[in-house]
Each structure stands twice: as structure tokens, then as C-alpha cells.
Length: 125
Image 1 (tube, rainbow, N blue to C red):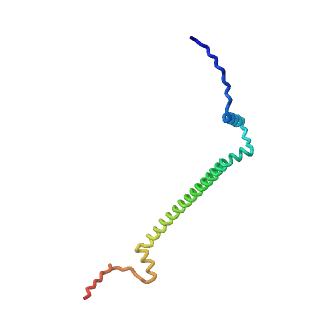
Image 2: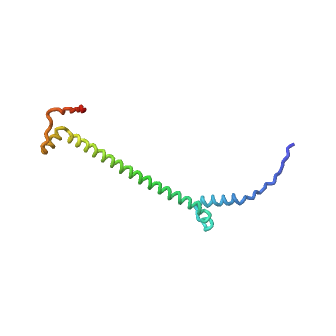
């Protein structure tokens, strides 16, 4: 009942893709990245794409930094203008007091009224 079956070991012939992959892995492991002209021209579109991405990344970084600097400059300007607004407003409030107005008008000869103004009505027929 027990049979011994002898199978011939088939020798597998590796296909070209696996040989190429193995060679590439060996070169990668040995840090051998030398390229010939044909390989370089084959990789040119990918290298151009990577170069374009790097340039776009650098441009984006510079633009972001420029925007941040401009935002900080505008924030400082807003703070300065706000403090100037508060200063001018307080000066205006001081100058518009009745006593300050009376002192300035004394030089022109106009005097402050001691009696309140009266209302003039007209019943014109």
C-alpha cells in the first residue's frame, strides 16, 4: 500500500523579471546607484516630477513665511493705530469740555452764556 514515488525535481528557470528584480536589490544593498544613459533617460519624467514637487514645496514655504511676516507687521500696525486712536480720543474729550471751549473763545471776545437759551416760537398767519 505504501508507494514511494520519486519525483524528478524540476529545475525552475527564473523568469527575466525576477532576475532583474534580484539584480536591482543586490545593487541597492551594495549602494551601487550608477546609472547609464538609457536608464537615466527612462527615469527622466519621474525625476522631472520630483524636481517640480521640490520647487513647489520651496515656493509654498516661502509664500507661507512671507504671509506670516506680513500678518505680524499688520498686527503691529493695528496695535499702534489703536493706541493712537485712544490717545486722540482722550485729547478730543479734554478739548471739548465746556471749560476748555470757554478758555479758547475768551481770546475772540465770545463769552459763555449765564442764562439758558430760550425757545423762539412763531405763529405766523
